[in-house]
Image (cartoon, rainbow, N blue to C red; front, side, top):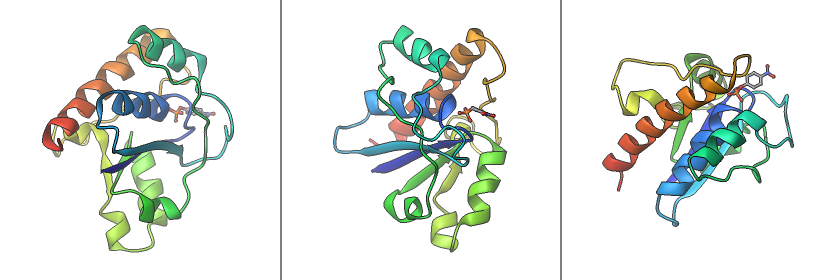
Length: 148
Ligand code: 4NP
């Protein structure tokens, strides 16, 4: 299975999602994350994401932010958006239906068809990152249960 986690900046939500999935999935899986913007290209995850991950024994500090590229549609089987803005940004650049069909809202793994959002924690405090972690962890383990 090849899975790409996508948010806006690829420094807060998707690096956490990437780390959680990498920590629990089979080593045979290809897992990465990207941002729909290139605003933080080359940067490490936000310190608050690094700390939150570390609190749960997950190391994400070696990740580097990158922008989503069209080749990702070919390379990955599933492309998870954190919120509906990420989802529509990805859908807008999908070159065909095969690509568009790979895009899913991550929280729908836990709450099918409810289109729940993983909130952007960037402007908030550390507590918001822990809440995001809990949401991501729940949805990712639901995904793993139906794909292992
Ligand atoms: P992320 O959070 O999409 O979860 O990585 C954000 C990071 C940076 C910005 C916005 C959201 N920003 O505006 O720079």
